[in-house]
Length: 325
Image 1 (tube, rainbow, N blue to C red):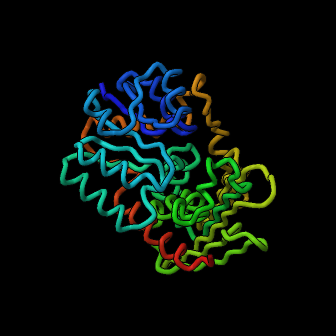
Image 2 (spheres, one colour):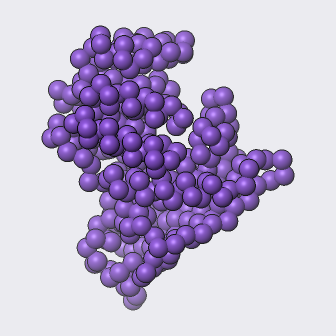
Image 3 (cartoon, rainbow, N blue to C red):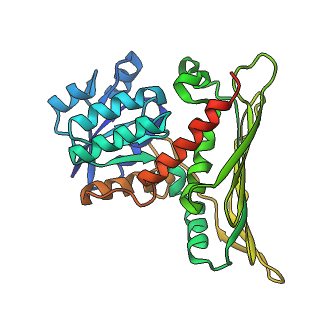
């Protein structure tokens, strides 16, 4: 039985807690939350609440610390848990710099524990399909790809921290990271990249970015946005292989071949984030149950690898450095 302490009692903490409750081989035993809201939520969950990871670990038997807090808190909290020789799951992004992430991984290695980064997109059914297509070569080589992830600006972020460059890394680290992580996991590190961005007058953060990643044998482009418009969330992609165009339209993956009827490869996979009704076939369940299995076996995740995480952060750090203030 893997005993878990969750750090952070916001929406993501609630999602993780509800999904762990569906698993037979783990148990959430405590939470860390300093705010009155956090303490109230811990009470609703029937769990003891502590002000710090150190205090929680002193009072409870903990195997795994799950960090579900804003980005700017990750390094200190991850390092605190690792120094206490606890396995760690951290929400993405792990850090806002490659250097900080390297330090975290180095500490995990020195302490003999595992560090996992919760890139949930790696655990969707459409990603599983795409990964299999790329690796099997069933439609030939992937020649070109396009990824799109558009959202209304995140007015819901508590205290507006997502709009603070130093705290969130802005649009590239918060939103585009999902697609970049997928690209790097599928195609490796790009040889070169470029991007454009725009923002409305009086807004000191990028609202819309286009990215171009160049590889020896393919080009990959992506689009990400926090728009000053209440559009429905859009997440879709298309990949052109030598013998098929494969399109994910947000609900299903369809392969289009020459002189052949379209082939639907996967149906919609709904994410259930209601902590009382979490579904065992959702993204978060598959992600967290995978990490629990890795913890039990003392192994890193093959889906979110150290070098993959570091490559993504290195690219994002370079992009963020050039984005106008």
